[in-house]
Image (tube, rainbow, N blue to C red; front, side):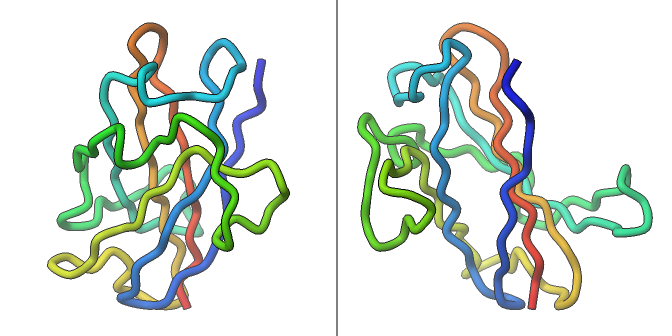
Length: 132
Protein backbone atom coordinates (compact mmCIF):
# COMPACT_ATOMS: atom_id res chain seq x y z
CA UNK A 1 0.00 0.00 0.00
CA UNK A 2 1.27 3.45 -0.88
CA UNK A 3 1.63 5.76 2.09
CA UNK A 4 -0.85 8.65 2.26
CA UNK A 5 0.79 12.00 2.89
CA UNK A 6 -0.12 15.64 2.53
CA UNK A 7 2.05 18.07 0.60
CA UNK A 8 2.97 21.17 2.62
CA UNK A 9 3.52 24.72 1.43
CA UNK A 10 2.79 28.38 2.09
CA UNK A 11 0.84 31.16 0.39
CA UNK A 12 0.21 34.83 0.98
CA UNK A 13 -3.08 36.02 2.45
CA UNK A 14 -5.55 36.62 -0.41
CA UNK A 15 -2.95 35.30 -2.85
CA UNK A 16 -3.01 32.36 -5.19
CA UNK A 17 -0.89 29.23 -5.20
CA UNK A 18 0.27 26.82 -7.89
CA UNK A 19 0.06 23.20 -6.81
CA UNK A 20 2.47 20.66 -8.30
CA UNK A 21 2.73 16.92 -7.74
CA UNK A 22 4.04 13.74 -9.30
CA UNK A 23 1.06 11.39 -9.28
CA UNK A 24 0.89 7.66 -9.79
CA UNK A 25 -2.22 5.65 -10.51
CA UNK A 26 -3.51 2.59 -8.73
CA UNK A 27 -1.14 0.48 -10.84
CA UNK A 28 1.93 2.40 -9.63
CA UNK A 29 2.64 4.00 -13.03
CA UNK A 30 2.65 7.76 -13.59
CA UNK A 31 -0.92 8.96 -14.01
CA UNK A 32 -1.91 10.34 -17.43
CA UNK A 33 -4.98 12.30 -18.57
CA UNK A 34 -6.32 9.27 -20.49
CA UNK A 35 -6.60 7.37 -17.21
CA UNK A 36 -8.70 10.02 -15.43
CA UNK A 37 -12.39 10.56 -16.16
CA UNK A 38 -12.97 13.59 -13.92
CA UNK A 39 -11.18 15.97 -11.56
CA UNK A 40 -12.29 18.49 -8.97
CA UNK A 41 -10.92 20.39 -6.00
CA UNK A 42 -12.17 21.86 -2.75
CA UNK A 43 -10.48 24.24 -0.30
CA UNK A 44 -11.07 24.23 3.44
CA UNK A 45 -10.09 26.42 6.39
CA UNK A 46 -8.70 24.11 9.07
CA UNK A 47 -8.95 24.26 12.86
CA UNK A 48 -5.57 23.44 14.43
CA UNK A 49 -7.33 22.47 17.67
CA UNK A 50 -9.78 20.05 16.05
CA UNK A 51 -8.35 17.90 13.23
CA UNK A 52 -11.86 16.80 12.17
CA UNK A 53 -13.15 20.34 11.64
CA UNK A 54 -12.82 21.89 8.23
CA UNK A 55 -14.85 24.77 6.82
CA UNK A 56 -15.44 24.94 3.05
CA UNK A 57 -14.08 28.11 1.44
CA UNK A 58 -16.73 30.01 -0.53
CA UNK A 59 -16.29 29.55 -4.28
CA UNK A 60 -13.78 26.72 -3.83
CA UNK A 61 -16.00 23.73 -3.07
CA UNK A 62 -16.23 20.81 -5.51
CA UNK A 63 -14.94 22.93 -8.41
CA UNK A 64 -14.70 20.85 -11.57
CA UNK A 65 -11.44 20.86 -13.52
CA UNK A 66 -10.62 19.87 -17.08
CA UNK A 67 -8.38 16.83 -16.70
CA UNK A 68 -6.15 17.77 -19.64
CA UNK A 69 -5.51 21.20 -18.09
CA UNK A 70 -4.12 19.82 -14.80
CA UNK A 71 -2.58 16.46 -15.73
CA UNK A 72 0.23 15.88 -18.25
CA UNK A 73 1.10 12.87 -20.42
CA UNK A 74 4.78 13.26 -19.57
CA UNK A 75 6.71 14.47 -16.54
CA UNK A 76 7.52 18.17 -16.63
CA UNK A 77 10.82 19.65 -15.48
CA UNK A 78 10.93 23.41 -15.32
CA UNK A 79 11.84 26.18 -12.89
CA UNK A 80 8.65 25.64 -10.87
CA UNK A 81 9.67 22.12 -9.82
CA UNK A 82 12.53 22.18 -7.31
CA UNK A 83 11.99 18.83 -5.56
CA UNK A 84 14.17 16.67 -7.82
CA UNK A 85 15.18 16.19 -11.45
CA UNK A 86 12.37 13.72 -12.26
CA UNK A 87 9.53 16.24 -12.56
CA UNK A 88 5.78 16.58 -12.05
CA UNK A 89 2.67 15.53 -13.98
CA UNK A 90 0.03 17.53 -12.05
CA UNK A 91 -0.24 21.33 -11.97
CA UNK A 92 -3.07 23.61 -10.93
CA UNK A 93 -3.01 27.35 -10.24
CA UNK A 94 -5.82 28.37 -7.91
CA UNK A 95 -8.06 31.08 -9.37
CA UNK A 96 -8.71 33.73 -6.72
CA UNK A 97 -9.91 36.77 -8.73
CA UNK A 98 -13.57 36.34 -7.71
CA UNK A 99 -13.33 34.28 -4.51
CA UNK A 100 -10.22 34.51 -2.31
CA UNK A 101 -9.02 31.10 -1.20
CA UNK A 102 -6.74 32.10 1.67
CA UNK A 103 -8.44 35.00 3.48
CA UNK A 104 -7.05 34.51 7.00
CA UNK A 105 -3.34 34.93 7.71
CA UNK A 106 -1.81 32.70 10.36
CA UNK A 107 -4.19 29.83 9.61
CA UNK A 108 -3.84 26.57 7.73
CA UNK A 109 -5.91 25.55 4.76
CA UNK A 110 -6.40 22.24 2.98
CA UNK A 111 -6.74 22.09 -0.80
CA UNK A 112 -7.96 18.63 -1.75
CA UNK A 113 -8.12 17.27 -5.28
CA UNK A 114 -10.27 14.27 -6.16
CA UNK A 115 -9.28 12.51 -9.38
CA UNK A 116 -11.75 9.91 -10.60
CA UNK A 117 -9.93 7.31 -12.71
CA UNK A 118 -11.54 5.57 -15.66
CA UNK A 119 -11.44 2.48 -13.46
CA UNK A 120 -10.63 2.03 -9.80
CA UNK A 121 -11.08 4.12 -6.67
CA UNK A 122 -10.85 7.91 -6.46
CA UNK A 123 -7.33 9.29 -6.02
CA UNK A 124 -7.02 12.07 -3.43
CA UNK A 125 -4.20 14.61 -3.56
CA UNK A 126 -4.00 16.99 -0.60
CA UNK A 127 -2.04 20.17 -0.02
CA UNK A 128 -1.80 21.83 3.41
CA UNK A 129 -1.20 25.54 3.04
CA UNK A 130 0.11 27.81 5.78
CA UNK A 131 -1.08 31.34 5.04
CA UNK A 132 1.28 34.21 5.80
